[in-house]
Length: 302
View 1 (cartoon, rainbow, N blue to C red):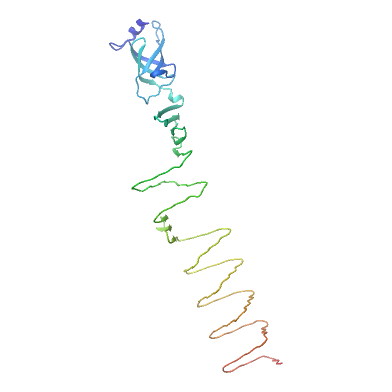
View 2 (view 1 turned 90 degrees about the horizontal axis):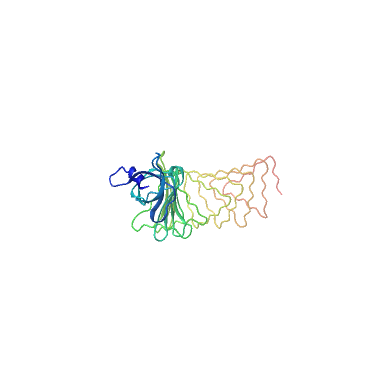
């Protein structure tokens, strides 16, 4: 056996320098069992232990072809990787802290996953190389993001979604503003919330709901056109006052009941009735400062 090693030497002072195959998983203290296979009839194959003199990031697997060097039968060192089986099996490389937190790279080469686990084994972060998606997970407890002297910016070329089973709250000591610019018209739609008032500005504004309730102590509306289409309207007011240049009404029937006084003050008054004009009261007084005319084909008095 020693004679075999001496004949395989290619470097002065080293009995063997050449390829070997890993035939077992890592044993204690960084040793692997390797198989040195001679292809000629004069030298027989044999297996022995070899120490992996490689960086900690290098992962050896059963079936890998490695480069070994050694002087004695049980004094071999793995100094390189000639062929790795990682392309044919799952990759699993991990780093672990003293308290048990772990970073793991696993999966196929075309779909690797970078994962971070807490000391309790809970998945905190995951990145998928194929889908290019990153997930931050907090299985238990809260997630707190803070900056002492700076801003926090969320930027995305696609979209940002906030989803929660409980209400989503936004608080600010100065105000909250949401802005959407229009690149075509160079206009901006925004909603701004401050401690004493809320501002909303947009070229179009729409509200749709099955039921709604609006409670405002004082309301002012200013605009050019107001169109209202409703099936039924009921207004209960202490006082109603309207000021207008022209009022035009087109109504099928009007029923009005006034408990107290109805008074109309106008410069002129014209009443046009197509069919019958009927006036009924307990007592009627008609008074004219000048002329009082009654005209008809027949006039009945009494």
